[in-house]
Length: 275
Image (tube, rainbow, N blue to C red; front, top):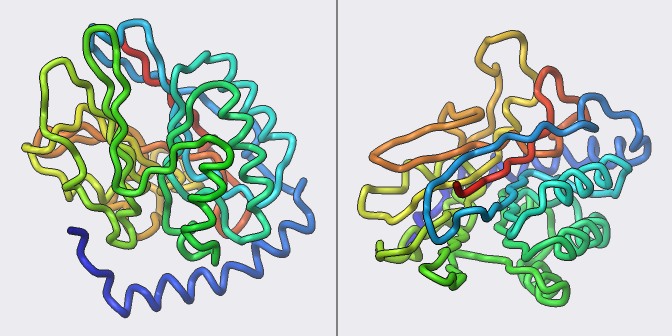
């Protein structure tokens, strides 16, 4: 079972989100004043599993989508051009309740491209949107919102197992939902924050873990490590990490926190290809 978040951490998260809401409100009034968010880069990850050979999945993260902008249409077109068989969205979908119609407009367009599997992040919990609303809207739009749940996709000679963990940042992730290892099964674990890697042990049958949360630091200066990362990263800013035989990839995400600025840290779309 997931551990409980301390009252002090609850207070910290609550205060930080409350203080950031005026910024989201202010920049929502001038939505076109953004820098470094419009053009995503595509990162290709190779995986080897014969029953999935030739198939592909796209992962995106950290949408923070409170209003729909032209750059979101660019993201949709870029994803469409990649021709995914599945699409994974790993949390921080929005910041405020007013973003719900814009968010699900975007997710419904994704669903027209491929089946969509979604997990929640810390901002989703502090947005003021009840989880029941996320579940109801996901069901209405034929999206798979996974909250410590597993979906098995049958293949001609095996199966793809998609595990969606709840938010590790707020200690809601329950790794007990990861099924045991089985022949001819490839398991993708989706979670919001890199701290998920510290919850996994060698016995957990994860072939790859995909997450976001860090924004890659959002502002990067040369080759220096980002000077700021949110709680739950454990120093993991972007890219490949491994621990106890588990393989993790941290996606830089598509959105922003505090100010609509990315510096030397472009938005990222991950393409997982089985070869």
